Length: 143
Image (cartoon, rainbow, N blue to C red; front, top):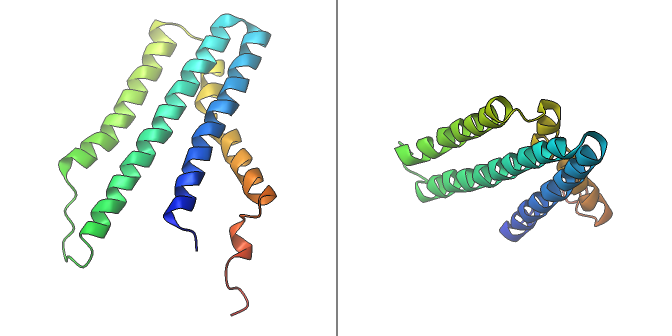
Protein backbone atom coordinates (compact mmCIF):
# COMPACT_ATOMS: atom_id res chain seq x y z
CA UNK A 1 0.00 0.00 0.00
CA UNK A 2 1.27 3.44 -0.85
CA UNK A 3 1.79 6.19 1.72
CA UNK A 4 0.82 9.85 1.58
CA UNK A 5 4.38 10.76 0.59
CA UNK A 6 4.17 8.38 -2.38
CA UNK A 7 0.98 10.06 -3.58
CA UNK A 8 2.48 13.52 -3.05
CA UNK A 9 5.52 12.48 -5.11
CA UNK A 10 3.26 11.23 -7.91
CA UNK A 11 1.35 14.52 -7.89
CA UNK A 12 4.58 16.56 -8.04
CA UNK A 13 5.90 14.42 -10.91
CA UNK A 14 2.61 14.72 -12.79
CA UNK A 15 2.77 18.52 -12.57
CA UNK A 16 6.36 18.47 -13.81
CA UNK A 17 5.50 16.04 -16.62
CA UNK A 18 2.55 18.23 -17.68
CA UNK A 19 4.84 21.26 -17.91
CA UNK A 20 7.53 19.31 -19.77
CA UNK A 21 5.09 17.73 -22.25
CA UNK A 22 3.30 21.05 -22.76
CA UNK A 23 6.56 22.88 -23.36
CA UNK A 24 7.51 20.35 -26.03
CA UNK A 25 4.05 20.73 -27.59
CA UNK A 26 4.37 24.54 -27.58
CA UNK A 27 7.86 24.43 -29.11
CA UNK A 28 6.78 22.02 -31.83
CA UNK A 29 3.69 24.14 -32.56
CA UNK A 30 5.79 27.31 -32.80
CA UNK A 31 8.36 25.64 -35.03
CA UNK A 32 5.75 24.10 -37.30
CA UNK A 33 3.02 26.73 -37.50
CA UNK A 34 4.46 29.97 -36.14
CA UNK A 35 4.62 31.93 -32.93
CA UNK A 36 0.83 32.33 -32.59
CA UNK A 37 0.39 28.56 -32.57
CA UNK A 38 3.19 28.23 -30.01
CA UNK A 39 1.57 30.91 -27.85
CA UNK A 40 -1.80 29.19 -28.21
CA UNK A 41 -0.33 25.84 -27.15
CA UNK A 42 1.40 27.52 -24.20
CA UNK A 43 -1.92 29.09 -23.16
CA UNK A 44 -3.57 25.67 -23.33
CA UNK A 45 -0.71 24.26 -21.26
CA UNK A 46 -1.22 26.96 -18.64
CA UNK A 47 -4.92 26.13 -18.36
CA UNK A 48 -4.12 22.41 -18.18
CA UNK A 49 -1.65 22.98 -15.37
CA UNK A 50 -4.03 25.26 -13.44
CA UNK A 51 -6.83 22.70 -13.85
CA UNK A 52 -4.69 19.85 -12.51
CA UNK A 53 -3.45 21.92 -9.60
CA UNK A 54 -6.92 23.13 -8.59
CA UNK A 55 -8.42 19.67 -9.06
CA UNK A 56 -5.77 18.18 -6.79
CA UNK A 57 -6.39 20.82 -4.13
CA UNK A 58 -10.16 20.32 -4.37
CA UNK A 59 -9.89 16.54 -4.12
CA UNK A 60 -7.56 16.92 -1.14
CA UNK A 61 -10.11 19.17 0.59
CA UNK A 62 -12.88 16.63 0.04
CA UNK A 63 -10.70 13.82 1.41
CA UNK A 64 -9.80 15.89 4.48
CA UNK A 65 -13.50 16.65 5.03
CA UNK A 66 -14.36 12.98 4.74
CA UNK A 67 -11.69 11.96 7.22
CA UNK A 68 -12.70 14.70 9.65
CA UNK A 69 -16.34 13.59 9.49
CA UNK A 70 -15.70 9.84 9.57
CA UNK A 71 -18.41 8.05 11.51
CA UNK A 72 -20.88 10.91 11.19
CA UNK A 73 -24.22 9.85 9.79
CA UNK A 74 -24.69 12.95 7.60
CA UNK A 75 -21.57 14.38 5.97
CA UNK A 76 -21.63 18.14 5.51
CA UNK A 77 -19.72 19.55 2.53
CA UNK A 78 -19.42 23.35 2.77
CA UNK A 79 -20.82 25.43 -0.08
CA UNK A 80 -17.33 26.89 -0.60
CA UNK A 81 -16.07 23.47 -1.76
CA UNK A 82 -18.87 23.27 -4.32
CA UNK A 83 -18.24 26.88 -5.37
CA UNK A 84 -14.53 26.24 -5.87
CA UNK A 85 -15.18 23.08 -7.90
CA UNK A 86 -17.71 24.68 -10.24
CA UNK A 87 -15.85 28.01 -10.22
CA UNK A 88 -12.77 26.21 -11.52
CA UNK A 89 -14.74 24.81 -14.45
CA UNK A 90 -16.37 28.17 -15.15
CA UNK A 91 -13.05 30.00 -15.06
CA UNK A 92 -11.47 27.47 -17.42
CA UNK A 93 -14.38 27.74 -19.86
CA UNK A 94 -14.30 31.54 -19.82
CA UNK A 95 -10.53 31.58 -20.32
CA UNK A 96 -10.75 29.09 -23.19
CA UNK A 97 -13.58 31.08 -24.81
CA UNK A 98 -11.64 34.33 -24.49
CA UNK A 99 -8.50 32.85 -26.00
CA UNK A 100 -10.25 31.16 -28.90
CA UNK A 101 -12.92 33.73 -29.76
CA UNK A 102 -11.62 37.12 -28.67
CA UNK A 103 -7.89 36.60 -29.18
CA UNK A 104 -8.43 34.25 -32.16
CA UNK A 105 -5.72 31.83 -31.13
CA UNK A 106 -5.30 28.69 -33.27
CA UNK A 107 -7.74 26.17 -31.80
CA UNK A 108 -5.82 22.98 -32.64
CA UNK A 109 -2.63 24.23 -30.98
CA UNK A 110 -4.64 25.41 -27.97
CA UNK A 111 -6.29 21.99 -27.60
CA UNK A 112 -2.92 20.26 -27.92
CA UNK A 113 -1.59 22.34 -25.03
CA UNK A 114 -4.77 21.78 -23.05
CA UNK A 115 -4.39 18.00 -23.35
CA UNK A 116 -0.76 17.93 -22.21
CA UNK A 117 -1.95 15.76 -19.33
CA UNK A 118 -2.23 12.76 -21.68
CA UNK A 119 1.51 12.49 -22.47
CA UNK A 120 2.20 13.38 -18.82
CA UNK A 121 0.23 10.31 -17.71
CA UNK A 122 2.21 8.15 -20.13
CA UNK A 123 5.47 9.64 -18.79
CA UNK A 124 4.38 8.93 -15.20
CA UNK A 125 3.51 5.32 -16.08
CA UNK A 126 6.92 4.92 -17.72
CA UNK A 127 8.60 6.41 -14.67
CA UNK A 128 6.79 4.00 -12.36
CA UNK A 129 7.67 1.01 -14.54
CA UNK A 130 11.35 1.98 -14.79
CA UNK A 131 11.65 2.60 -11.05
CA UNK A 132 9.71 -0.51 -10.01
CA UNK A 133 6.75 1.36 -8.55
CA UNK A 134 4.11 -0.50 -10.53
CA UNK A 135 1.29 -1.40 -8.21
CA UNK A 136 0.48 -4.92 -9.37
CA UNK A 137 3.70 -6.36 -7.94
CA UNK A 138 2.97 -4.84 -4.53
CA UNK A 139 -0.45 -6.44 -4.05
CA UNK A 140 -1.06 -9.77 -2.40
CA UNK A 141 -2.40 -11.67 -5.38
CA UNK A 142 -1.21 -15.04 -4.05
CA UNK A 143 -3.16 -14.80 -0.76
